[in-house]
Amino acid sequence: MSEDPVRSVLWMVRGSWITMALRAACVLGIFDVLDGPLVEDEVAARTDTDPPTLSRLLRSLSDLGLVERVAPDAYRNTALGATLREDHPSRLRDLVLMQATLPNLAAWHALDEAVRSGSGVYESVNGLPSWEHLARDPEAQRMFNAAMARRGSGQVAALLTATDLSGASTIVDVGGGRGAMLTGLLEALPSLHGVLADQPAMAAEAEAVFAAAGLGDRTTCVPSDFFRSLPGGGDVYTIANVLHDWDDADAVRILRTVRAAVPDHARLLVVEHVLDAPGRSFEELREVHLVDLHMLVMFGARERTQAEYDELLVDAGFTASTRGATGTDWNVLEARPAAETAE
Image (spheres, one colour):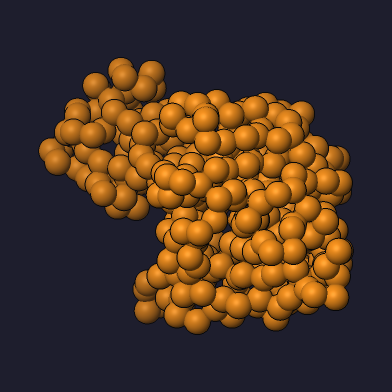
């Protein structure tokens, strides 16, 4: 960053332009064709773009370190740019496309109102709650689901490090989306059976994912609404990257539904980015703080400290949590049914 404070802040001002440049490059498929050096005219032909105008975009992508100029008129991906290929395992491309949708950008434009009111602004800006908007827009739903699935490998690593799952026979993943996390757990623990509980469309999508992974005989997908009822009978229940999408009242409602389904001997594992977890780098903490603002804008929700999660858990009939070391930026909070609420 420049030592000149004006230049440093000016760079921050350009942040939305950078996001949209990344979006354009992803939509055009630029990173997908630059796996090796390619002259500008060939890039233009493969991406159906105007060559002189494409050159201007490539110039800025080079300034950002996403592509490198290897000849006066030729470029290739850098290691950074390669992460935005459609087939990259990080699925960052899906995240770029999701974050850069016009409804999301419009909601962020009202961040000042969210800070004044302490409430989410997505619905007031766009006319519908975010979840309803997704339900009505299959392409937006696809991008959201793909962006969320990219987190599965890190969550799996956190769970396997933080707690011993070797003795479990059935794990119920609450709000498990396309099943990325549950797939990883089942692949790591061959004796485990998985139950995915999510909205009907997501449960159907997850069923196809499990079948493609050869896990169809070890999984059950149950269409569920976690505000109403969830499947019982599991040894372990997981709820990953869900509670931070909801305000405290709704988060407690979700956890009470979980508590109604959880047998007295079972464990609940909450996987989130806990605000006060130690050991985060500056970059990781900055990411959590920005996501916290995104939760505010989109849902009137937030990231939480462990003590704040414990308040929700205890209110819903669980014990306060213990936090296991994960070796990742994900945190795992383990709680059990509280004795006084056991049936």
